[in-house]
Length: 115
Image: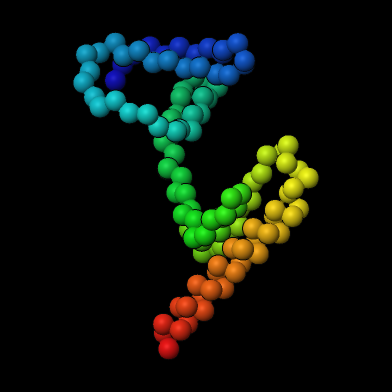
């Protein structure tokens, strides 16, 4: 497809690129996350990135979750607002213990069902 490409920077210093086709074209519109390489000679290469696969939580608490990653590893995630930093140590221990207990119960139930 022939057209004109314009490069610029916005007021925050981020790169902008626009492409305007000079041909009459019909195509499906889409939005994607891409890797863009602009070479010294003016060539531009755009490659669409794969969509990120999110891990589904197995157990949840108020500020945390346990999930099994696509790489076969378990992940414990904990997040709390900075303003509540005084509560963080106790809440972290409480929620980690609660999720560990849920996991232990689930494993015990699975073992009983197999027997």
